[in-house]
Image: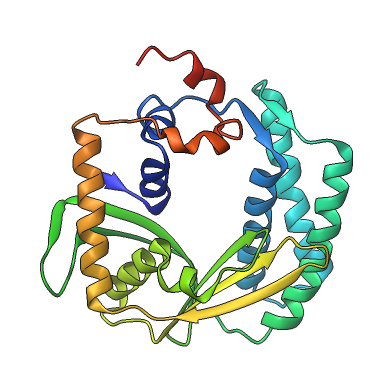
Amino acid sequence: MILSVTRLRTYLACGRQYRFRYVERAEPEFLSAEMVYGSAMHYAISEFHQAKNALTPEQVFEFYRLYWDAELEDAMRFGREVRFKQSDMEVYSSMATAFAELYVAQFAEVKPTDVELLFEIPVLDPVSGEGSSKHTLDGRIDLVSDNTLWEFKVSSRAASQSDVDNDIQLTAYALGFAYLYGTMPDEIALVTLTKTKTPKIDVKRTRRDPEDFRRFCLMACEVADAIEREAFPRNLEYQYGCRNCEHFKRCLGAQF
């Protein structure tokens, strides 16, 4: 089975949502500003680091705008509900402008070794051998520079140090790094673009060790085994987030 961190997180949050998204491959019922904004900023940052010549904040923002417009156009073409207004677009555009300026100023000197680095590895701890080679883990590392693994995300708040130390995406990507480079990253940096009243960029640093890899591989294999058994339980404690799920209406009408 092919796994990813997004697939693992989706299953752990709600098995039914996993079924709709990855087994039935159901189209999302709506598109929200939050969905588009995070992806658009990620795309702009990627283009910044892949550019042969240094980009200005205005050019970084233009990449954001191109992604936003393309997503909106696709939603209209496929008849998907769009859950944001013109005022939302203006707010997010203003935040994107601020983030572009902050990011260029703060990260212009970071020299990338690899950008958007793809990996496909066995869900197998390289030290203990625990896990299973019949399952694979796919991922894409945002940035590698000076043997440091960098990941970027957009959030309403900065992650705590505990969040960063226990983040399964950082563990999974450090494992991918170890397979690709044959060594552990010296450091892992999580860069969070916080959607606060005054936009900020927060950087937290952490590390991983072989025990983190072992635990991750065992957890991932348990999830894979449950999926193969077609166990897709609905998370009843997930009710607070159900109305924000892109399969909410479909779930209400499901007969299983």
